Length: 267
Image (tube, rainbow, N blue to C red):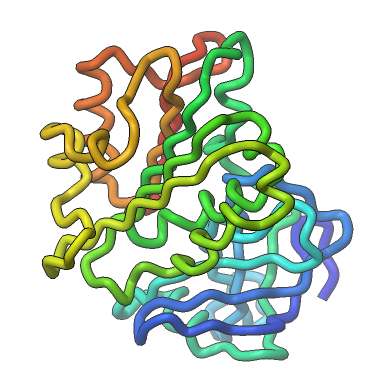
């Protein structure tokens, strides 16, 4: 199947985290380029007798952030099974050797270059996510440039249950890898579990943790000069966190108006 708008890639591995959470790796076309933090449009073909072109097939497309490094030979995507979901339920059924379409263009602006223009004073990069909103931050952490651009990286991942803390082992290992040690940045990983109280683990919603100061107490103070903050995940979390941060003077970074926030709702 050939097209100048998408390529057909092959699933090379599937990692099942929980009955509802899984990651998929696929082949990658050599011409495909993306910036860590961006997302791809994935397509699945399905039989459709009502297809307008008379082919008997139609394609369902969904956006998925890359959870792989910009220079890796494969692409990785992290997904949740949405009950009755037109795409995710079928995506979860696929296995090694099955095909998925990948739009040739990468999309999105949840990238660290949002903070580079005219703002050389940012030293702490906060990556705050809920659920599958972690995916773009995994890609950002796999970029060596992230580790040289910032002095401290603070990863906050909020989930309902501890088993949903996917990529935890990988994130905790990143700080000790020799490539990242040369970058000079320190990594702090803050898991948040809201459904069950766990010793030593934050247990409130991110908005509450910001409002009470618990998040900063567990990491470092938020500061307009030092802190650059990326939010990705549940729209309620993004909205509430954005409002709380705006009240403290943090503004969304735009092309002609650099700020300290980059935001993306994950559905």
